[in-house]
Length: 363
Image (cartoon, rainbow, N blue to C red; front, side):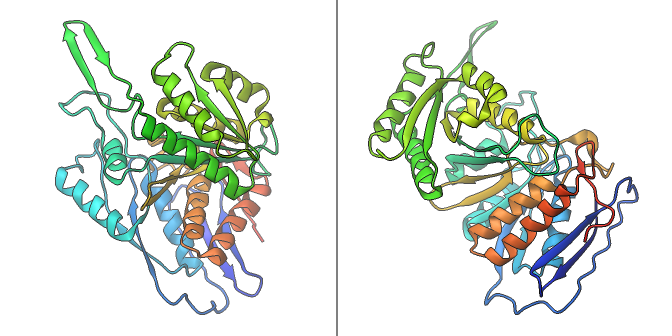
């Protein structure tokens, strides 16, 4: 949907224009005025476009960065389990680049449901190899989108290296499959500490642990106990807990009661998508994943949106805001603000169709 970009260096603004009904797929970039001096160095970032509309969204990111003269150089790798572009060698190349650069931006690598001898998907293997234990999704209302709830501002923090995604399944006897959910005290305390540290750093007032300890008394019970223990170390942050099914209902009825939510793997996946729906859908919410050493930026609700490929209707908002957050992580505040403010200004115009942000005359 991206058609024209321009940067105004005197007012520190980046103009982004989307045109409704554009089907040719052609893009035109226009950079106006003289840009300020570039940063002392160029940052190298690993880019993995992924499947579905991922490559189209990454094209939007690259065009915006070019127009804004962002000092970032992308090392691009195509990794896909559904397009015959996946192998151990390619996975190692991606991992090597991510470890060298320490920062990456990626689209959704679609995971086929058919079992072909390997239970762990490439997505999961990337997370484990880099120990990307914390997924952070900031759900924030964008003026211009018409939704039932306005002015939402909550954060979902998901542990994403164990739980139901441990890839430990086996068929005991024919027709009987056991799927193991792994919960450890070490990783539960780690994600809880991450959530409370995040709340402290961002000036948040409450952390809510989401669980199903009434049924999974040992597994989720350990997660809940770990969160409660960590909460005692942060007396200034209010701590609560809520059962996952009630959490879903409360998010739909009254999401304003939540601030920071922390939860195991599967619950986080569900809540990420539910919360994205509250503010406009999968195409508007940015996300990021962290380890002690690496940061990988990706959309908050991970969908390949394969049915939109080539139709020029994919919403670039989430990926552009994700890219803006990545720039902030790189301490490129000037460029980060330029990109995010331009996107928000486009959305605020209110000219949207389907799941695509469109604008005819953005000033």
